[in-house]
Image (cartoon, rainbow, N blue to C red; front, side, top):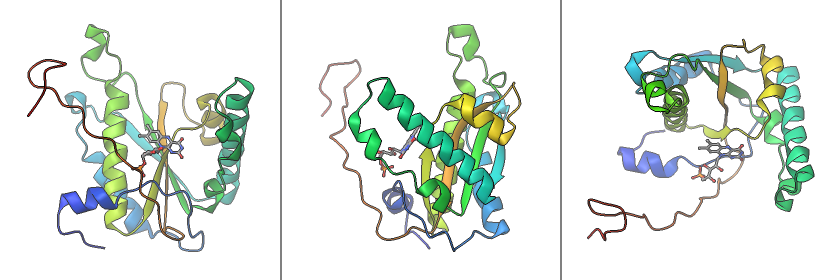
Length: 197
Ligand SMILES: Cc1cc2nc3c(=O)[nH]c(=O)nc-3n(C[C@H](O)[C@H](O)[C@H](O)COP(=O)(O)O)c2cc1C
């Protein structure tokens, strides 16, 4: 799939929650998506990320169980009722999941200013690049964080020194992916609260 410009690519990227499980990604496509992720900006160029490429049904099933458990936790803690009806079938349908792991010790100098978020910010930029690359290649994506990291870590054998920045579900979309509405931008001029024209 080709896009005339970045703006049409940005419009085409939508969160996809239904995949065609029978259409796998080629290993070349997976590498292109990960390479795009690695081109993301990151503090001090420490490149805090590493990736776990998941295609095994058994692993996807365990992740899905973690997703189901997370739903129950939210409900047990009085969270929004709609969570009960939120289907996580896609967690087994998607042909590919890429876990993006980050090393919190590679977050640049933010620690000195009470901003220990550099590695997660880098992981986020990385995930966004991957989503745009996958969109360009004609795949749907979902950035997924609806899980207790303590449940997901053992499934993927994540070492203690790394954090899970997100799970990226990737595959051919099954049907039309709905668009999410965006509200008006909130923009101020020079300081917060001053109208921008
Ligand atoms: C950090 C982050 C975490 C997210 N976690 C989830 C998730 O766990 N489950 C899910 O269905 N969508 C998740 N999303 C997707 C958002 O729901 C989605 O981006 C938003 O509703 C806007 O829709 P759009 O991506 O189609 O524009 C996440 C997005 C981000 C950036």
